[in-house]
Length: 207
Image 1 (cartoon, rainbow, N blue to C red):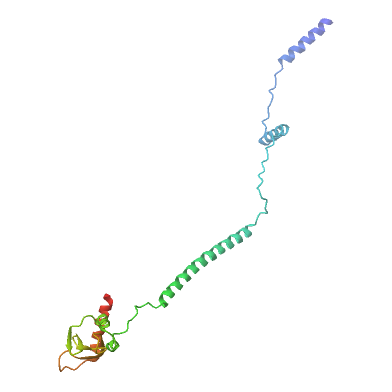
Image 2 (image 1 turned 30 degrees about the vertical axis):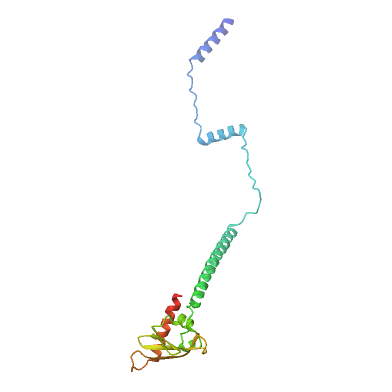
């Protein structure tokens, strides 16, 4: 009886060993499943916190809106243009004023000296006539009277010196006369006076 049990156990083991083994089927996981697995794994892994860096400006001021910034830039540009325009306008006004002053200011002409008048020599001594007309072309003596003669293209002029008294050698001009350059020619008085004055101006310019 005991042998029978052993025989049955051995036979059962033999039958089990001879049974075909069914291959195990491995089902591939879907991408979503893999993502879930990774997410689950990431959940289990402790997270690493990144340090937060805060930059604080020296002066904290409320941020301006874009419109406020644009308005400020416009005001600055306008102020700059006004300042530059004012400087240019002021400089132009100064130039215009200087030009107007130059235009309005009359040119200073050389002072015109009065024309030489022969009658102004009456009562004066010989040095004054020498200063006014220079040396005479001819000097002649007629008694106590001394005549100084000046010759010009248009006329001849005579100055008559008389002694101041009978007992002195000092003489002064007491009269003068002018006539045509040639005896018998008609005298052009204005032309003769002009010739006298030109001689005087030349001598005065040299002194």
